[in-house]
Length: 300
Image 1: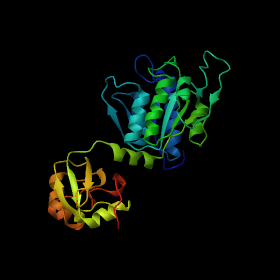
Image 2: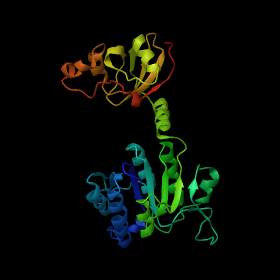
Image 3: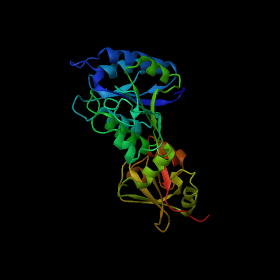
Image 4: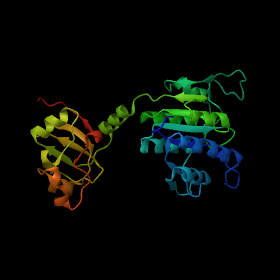
């Protein structure tokens, strides 16, 4: 967990007292984990239920966060995985009341062996988690592995560790893990490109000229206003849009920085004119190359 990394945390509800305040375990976890990681340069985006004392504690160290209304939103593990993917975190950290994933339930099988690293969450691995398992919290080991599946689909590895063990928590800031690392099946770039390729698109399309189609096919170019020939249908800023060539053949698809009405005004113009034409600018690119995936090669 060296400097520059970002992480999303989730915590067993057993760290809270029955009245909703932080218990001794929660306070100790917050003090050691968040202060230590902040000093090591790891960034954290705070999220939690509204009026959550742990979220307030983390925000006091990292200076930012957002809160979810105090209603039932499901287990924290899966919520954390969704947030990790949303903010493109480097790592999902799940603090539990058990120190690792075991090959059997250690509460029932005293000879169960902890697993340090899980390269792939196969059905056999999922079966190791059994049912709800944990004596605290609404989740259990199975929901933690389900969360790891969600995080892994976004290219984010997951760490399971004992949040009640002060030495284990302190070791995280020193790049030492006493727990289980669940690897992601694909890189974050691969995961993002897969999502860009398969996510539902808005009904509108952007037609580009031959030069833009060739540039986009190279896989390293953004879609600029000058290469746009026509707009079909309607879409909004942030929508997934199809990009087609002169014969309306599929070329690429990606997240559009401007709505259809704006793109119509920008089509064929230079990026330097955006601010003058619209009175504002969201950037020089209509679709940035990082938000774009090529669908078909075009001969150069």
